[in-house]
Length: 229
Image 1 (tube, one colour):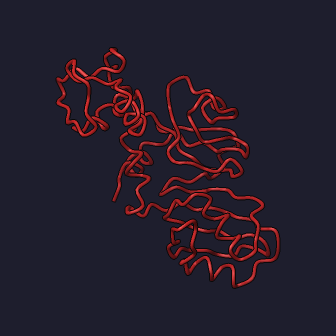
Image 2 (cartoon, rainbow, N blue to C red):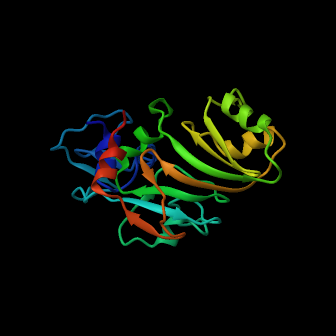
Image 3 (cartoon, one colour):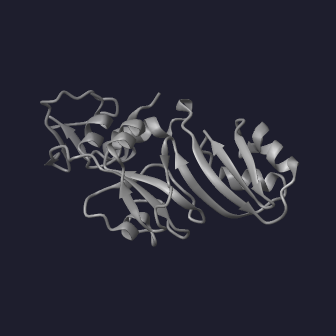
């Protein structure tokens, strides 16, 4: 097993955090400094700062209805971070991000092994949003967003589904995760996003989960979440 998977499955930190720890020389395997691409056997002695990894904790998968103003980071130094807001009794971290000015569904877990498969664009995982803009929607906005081919800081948007709901509101389903993608797509057509709410990730729906509250995923949702194809 790759060192990143081994450490993330212990629940100590994510794969990305593991990379930083390896670069800092803080992880050893059988008393020797770990290398970035090292493979691990189940009986290897893996330590961080000289401390052995804990036993693998029970997996935690949460759905949270994030309010505006909360930052999706586990960094305790950042004021208004999502971990401080939730105050869950065990270590968890967000899967992906949802802009500070946006609200709605975000998932949190202690299982670092599912983060990369969920975030990798080639798996085409759908995320659905409800968007309100500052003026009356025209066909140019909906058709332009659906067509794709919008340049966002050197990256090109893919075709997507967008449906107008009323004069200033539309739904959009993305399989990409470019930084502030919806806001920047709207800005291309001279619209400003006023509210942005994520209501679905894959087969997991926000439904009537109250703002600022979380719930554990059902067994069925967990199986759907960890299924990458």
